[in-house]
Amino acid sequence: MKSTPLSLIAGTVALAAVTGFAALTAPGDADTPEAGSAARLPVERSSLLCPAPGGSDLSDTTYTSFTPAGESDGEAGTAELKPSVALPVDEEEPAGTEKDEPADKEKDKESEKDEAEEKAAADKPVITLKEAGKPATAETSDSDAPALVGTATGRLAPGWAAQQTTTSLAGGSRGLLGVSCSGPDTDFWFPGASTAATRQDYVHLTNPDDTAAVADIELYGPEGSLKSDVGEGITVPARSSVPMLISTLTTEAVDDVTVHVTTRTGRVGAVVKAADDKAGSDWLAASEDPAGTLVMPGIPADATSVRLVAFAPGDDDADVKVQLMGKSATFSPAGSDTLHIKSQMTASVDLKNVTRGEPGSLRLSPAQGSTTPIVAALRVVRGTGDKQEIAYIPATGPVGERASVADNRAKGSVLSLTAPGESAKVKVTASAGSGGGEPTVKTYTVKGGTTLEVAPEVPSGLKGGYALTVETESGGPVYAARTLTLAQDGIQMFTVQTLPDDGGTVEVPAAEQDLSVLDD
Image 1 (spheres, rainbow, N blue to C red):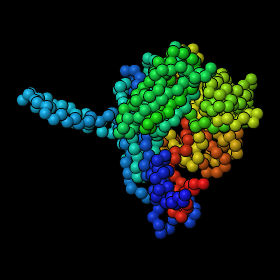
Image 2 (cartoon, rainbow, N blue to C red):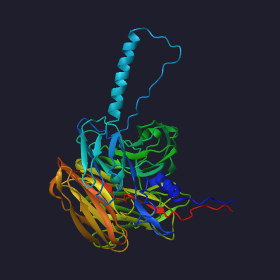
Image 3 (tube, rainbow, N blue to C red):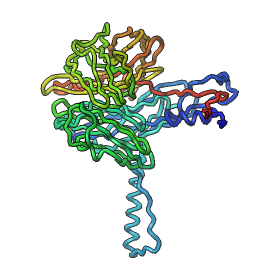
């Protein structure tokens, strides 16, 4: 059977389903790629989801939206984050329904007015980004604030990033909780959760679309799958968010659990909010997709405890080398140089204060010829006793061409850069402030096999917060993470966000390229 060649437009549509819509170059333009080649073009549409912040009545949440300055000549576009509240559906009265006049008319008018107000509130943006290169911010003290869903288009789409940062001073959610808002997907892995009595971990599912999504949640402990009768077929209504307390999905109390979220229909945003009775709380973002080698950058120099949690989702066991990329060299932690991960069982190891006063990043790589893909995350503790605070560092992808992180502040922001292979040079841009200031640019060289921790050069005349953009200029792959610290009553409250490639461009095949799949 002969297949019809896939055109440039069809190829772009297929790519857009994953990363956004590419800005096409019209035939005949000077920038049109040669026949048979491919071009990387900026996306024209990006989607982000921020979970419901929750917290106590003593919580404050800051939202920051940012798109790095670019050279795109496309339309100005928009970038808005709105409440994930289902819009009311207009209902028609069944034929033949009798009404009592005039009381029913008055009720109908009141109902229509309430629905109109509800629609207006649900469709009003919480935060609107107006220009690239300068972040926009918004704040709320509402502990019942909803999740946010948003779309960026035109020049604001390539590299669009958003951060949600909550400061909670009391209650079970005490801590500095930060999360990079992420795009919707159909498959997520969260090693590092728990169903123990001392933990209150929730997985937040947010549906950005106008139709319901159906999700499944699987739990895996050190002995394998945890029995659950309520983790299947979870309906997430259109434009809504559903938090699920993980410990209610099973009767088994386990310290280290890997959570696997998939969707049967639709797509969702997913993130885990982990709260420890003694060590505070933070968001656990999804691990990088299963791979043989993983990197977790940005372990603080003063970490008092580092716990590695890993999982092998396939049918084969995995043996991995555990290595810390420190300030000047790579080495294996004493007594924990390798980790055996049984198939579909969660493995963990307490690395204690592995950094010993220096910043570091952890790398897992195949040992003894093993190539089994794994997922992993770190649970990091700073402080001791009643002064503890936790944060999570999931395995992440490299910076690639460019990556950004929002909500950096004049004090307390630290950038961690690591090059697992050959040395690399990166350009770091501190944007203009949300309230004013001029951007600054600085270039760093990261020695292969090491971690470089820097305090970013604050924008001159800074007012408000700013964003950091990291671009790889030469050398091997670079992995990055930003640590934000806020000292409160002697506690170093902190949160860590990784910086994977922002996906601001997409590879588009040339029109002449045949992408057809021929049947035998």
